Amino acid sequence: MNYPAQGDYIDIHTHGSEPLPGIFTVETLMAHENREPVDLKGITFTTGIHPWHLDEENKDLLLGRVRVLAASSHIAAIGEAGFDRIRGASAPLQKEIFEKQVIISEKNHKPLVIHCVRAWDELLSEHKRLRPKMPWLVHGFRGKPELALQLVAKGMYLSFWFEFVLRSESAALLKRVPPQRIFLETDGAGVDIRDIYKKVSADLKIAEEKLKTLIYSNFHEFFKLNLRTT
Image (cartoon, rainbow, N blue to C red):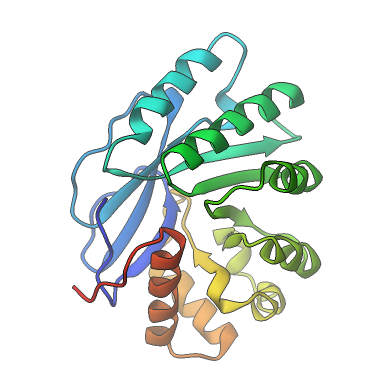
């Protein structure tokens, strides 16, 4: 996998990204898209089966694709995988495929990126039952501080929903989450990750460079890498 340079802005979850100087992106390749990871400076990749794009007819094909791609050195993590009570496949199928992606994550020693909408009980239950050794990252989080702390207590990382984190009311949540567990993202929405860092650094009352260093350290901890300074 490629690595961020110290001083880069890290966008932990996005879609359709292009290399930009000073910005390191984690690009999501959803299995149904049939895209391949490539060696691009400033970008690394995840791959997984999103619950929106899953059904009984394609589940085996998509799982096979994720299993193959998971072995690639360009794939840093599995996902986004997860649960969605609003949209997507049936709840039993979502659970089945989520569990199989956890197995892929564990087998390949790569962390898991999670999509979860109104299914926190299911997510926490699966974490308790499966007892993963690899870390989990919940992307697009915009829940209450009590839920955030519950997830963090289980060893999970949180990346905040870009639209929510730019609002003034997000400051209260940001201040409650341990800084060693946070990431920031654009989710392919066309917003500038630098604007998000600026807002969060102001909310946390720390210098932007300190926030970049913090998230750089979180990146290496999440992906179980030795710190690099290049």
